[in-house]
Structures are given as C-alpha cells and as structure tokens.
Image (cartoon, rainbow, N blue to C red; front, side, top):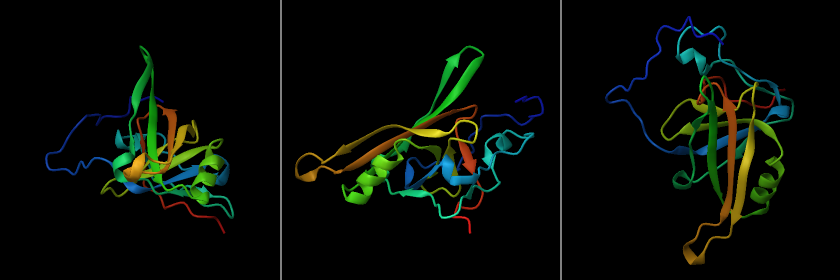
Length: 184
C-alpha cells in the first residue's frame, strides 16, 4: 500500500470526546470458512480513517451465523503492539481476551470447537457504536490461547477464557457494515 495520497494523517485527541475504557459484554467470532464475502477498507484509501474503516458488509454463507461470546466487562480486553524490524513493522492485533463466565456444556463445547478455526472477531468498546475488528481477508485472526477455571473458593469466577490475535498493517479495523447474518 502506498500512503502518498493520505494528506490528513494525524494523531489527535479531541477534548471532551468519549474515550471509555474496556469492551462491551458482547463479542462475535466468525470463522473464515463461514463467510461468503469479507468486507474490506476502500481501496485506494484517500484519508487516514479510510485505511481502517470497513463500510462494505460481511456476508455469511447459508445456515451460518456469528458465534456469540458474552464476556465479563472487568475480565476482558484488547491490547495490541507493533512488532518487527526497522522499516518492516506490522501490528499484532491482540491479544483480545474474552473471559466467558460459566462452565456449562455449551460454553465448553464452543471453546473446544473454535480452537482450530481462523476468522475475524467483532467487538465494541464499552459505550461504543461501531464494531472493532481483528483479522481480515488478508490475515485472519486465530485462537492464540485459552483456558478454563473452576474458580477458587466460594467467590472465584468459574468460566472459560479465549484469546484471539492476528497481524495487520493497521492496529485495528472499524467495521461499519451491517451486522453479519446467515445468508438466505
């Protein structure tokens, strides 16, 4: 990608802008093989925002739907970091950590099922509108880590945690398309 046509590159913080921390208590994992079409940022990009905004829709294959995750607000989150050599850097998207409360059969089975899929992860910042996305058609997200806990003592939180990560030229994508639903 050539960034010569991007003229509004800036790192800005607008005083008074909502910058709430944490992620919302609903997220989705969509296996790559379940998608008929994966939306992508417009090309060629003309603004810094257009490098990360996906306005086209993700389209699911027939009889497929996103896998819903209900993480705990205070035990889930996203961190990313820049990796690589001088003049050859890439963003590591994640880990995106989701702690999913409960040790029922559906939660355990879903965690076991998704561990070998590649795809995209959609989640919102707490109080946010559009979805953040890790993974893309170029480099998909994968389950990088996971675990299960029965909790410790009478106040521990039993549940499953799953961590997703991907690599990209951008730290995160912002998905502005329609929520992906099963085709047909």
